[in-house]
Length: 129
Image (cartoon, rainbow, N blue to C red; front, side, top):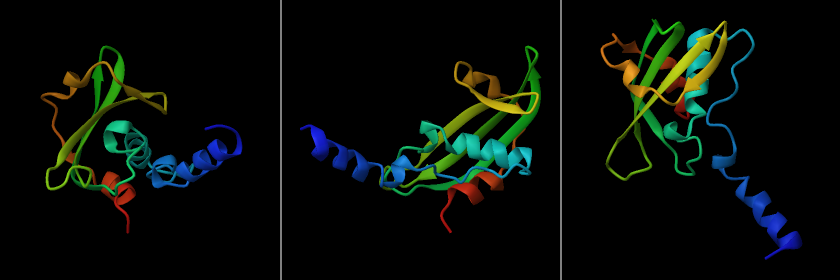
């Protein structure tokens, strides 16, 4: 299939929720925790490309803590919706470099042993009202 028909299908596919961000981009005055939540929700592990609605429960964050000169935060949550009746666990390691946030994809075990606390910002941004 080519030409206009393919473009029409691509346009329809991007009308689905999977082509739109799960959470709105945080405002310039947003708190660091809100920015971390928005970045986590933009990750595939957190369902950023799911066409099925996902609910986030029992979200947790640890940090900031230093590791090898890096300032890190660990975010975890339980997701429900993509697998019928069975919850999924999602985890992300977020690096803060002078206010610029990024995802560390090579070192998830760094989160072990750090104290966590509830992370309602993730649930507020990720769960539809």
